[in-house]
Length: 557
Image (tube, rainbow, N blue to C red; front, side, top):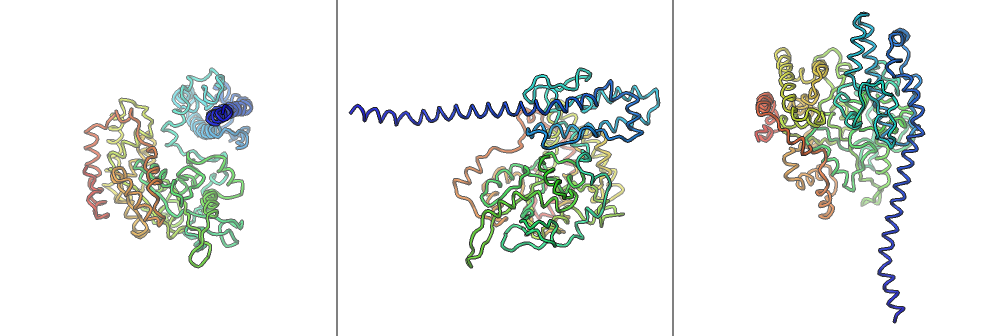
């Protein structure tokens, strides 16, 4: 009797013992990984410490002789600082360093240009101003205790101040305004080669009918000739920024028939990356891995390679149809909101030369490589969307003055567009990259985002390329208030199966993505600004409502 009782007690206690052992084991693993990360950084740091310190201390590097020698001899700033993706395993540190180097290189070149053009008397003033006002010349990603080492300010006390929060520095608005050219990595962007961008004259791809998703095997007649399976997106989420695209993507990727690519949400290949402009969602190591295969980042080959992991996912899930033939029903997606409104260097691309409005846009390029692609686009009141993006992109750096700064930017941008409309067509002004460049040069935080609010112009172009059956427009107000019905309509549009009640509940209960913080919501837009924007966008909203045959696109709420 006693033995039986003892056995029951042991059985009852064993789960608790197992839980305790599991917790101890997890803590041990976490401690080990933390030490590995710190040791990895410690091993990696000295090489960069020596090189960066020697190159960038103001007393040495920015001396008059060094600046003039650099300008005269055109010596590469980073000839002794080659980027090696295998040098460190800490991906956050890797990306931080890489982004800072690109930013630093751009700022140094700007400084050199100004110093070269300045007189001897002006040089000291120019240098002082640059060192005072240019963040990358004052700070590096090695400052402060971000990677487990308190003594990582390797650029010394010669800096005018220290970074108190590197993540805020990393996300500063200037990153979005500067063209962070990948010249340190890719020689392709040193000169502009039209033939590399000639998508419209590319031979159409032939996709394997066994795959629902547009997929093909690499052969001598395809862009990539490796005998492996390659896939392009079955559908695209192309905008609009700050209208719920990230949240929709995060929920759709939970569907069992959707294979997401290796990059998080957006590649920005059509709008940024193929022109050498860094897309911050792209992992540097993965970019290198594709580049080392000899694939040109300007060509469709590179875009296709971004979906290699999705292709593997699709290939792993075959099924049998009624004729007992293998069929692959999974699909993949690309979700870059910039695809809608960022038509980078369109005026230089083949077929668009010497015209004031583009003949070919990102929509044409998508249609050419994936003729049956499906397009999802979310819309939101352009006034509230713009202010939301302003608070998001500036990181709340203006605090309680956010509404006032936003108001001033709006006044200046509207003035510029109205002036353009007096001389050119609406479409010509919306696609005018020179106008946007001028506004960006004025350090206006919303120059690019403002342009995304001309919905009717972009929707007309989209409808001229894709049929209505290939486009699913979604109002953000519907998505927020009727999420379950909206998701079901998306599943139906994509021709994927509906999910069970439990799976749907899990999808609906996911945390909302990219929502404004409570603090930012406490800085409301000025009523005067709202009135000005509503009046400006009204004729475009009316045009949009007519195009969509839906009065809700008047955005009167």
